[in-house]
Length: 290
Image (cartoon, rainbow, N blue to C red):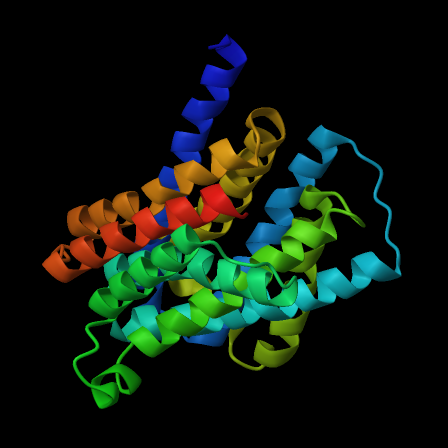
């Protein structure tokens, strides 16, 4: 293995750790400020943190009609994801939410991809989908539909569906705009849109918060998003998408551990069992089609 490849793999481990810890950071933030305030400041700090990265890459920014369509669509979906994640984490567990979203997103992405592009599935893929749905059934504890509809799981499932759309948009946006520029403009548009919604919500009240709030907010916006995403993009270009995507299976593990260590959340048996089954299914779905 080349030393450069080793370096990128270590960086990928760091990125997965940062992504996993983001759910714990979001849980802490739900205790402090209103949702619209958190959403605005998250995107605002994320936009600022992209400036030195854009300077480092020094790639000329080009915007065309196609890029603007993807940026606008991506910004809307990212805002919706943040809103539903906030609501779900507020009433649910950070560890459980991360596992449900991380395992359901690639399954739903696969289904959307196969449907939109009319891909014929093999018997192995059908089996993998069945396993994925079985794992999801266990994850969501679907003993009855009313329990599901009244709980936080519905918001986690909506997040997974939205992120499936974000994933497909991101893949196709590369034809029109560089991924780093794409992420920056999404955060910039989301910042403007969330400000317009929350401008009368006492946005400056965050400066009355204590250190724990700011550590969580900076972690979520900069470490857990900007830096982790940049590492992922860089590693993908060097190691290939199949190798980098395989590291995604570590996100739920790190999320559960951080929630256990910091929030004292219990690691529930059904989350481990359902998550393992679903991640096994996702591995074969990615291996065979995506």
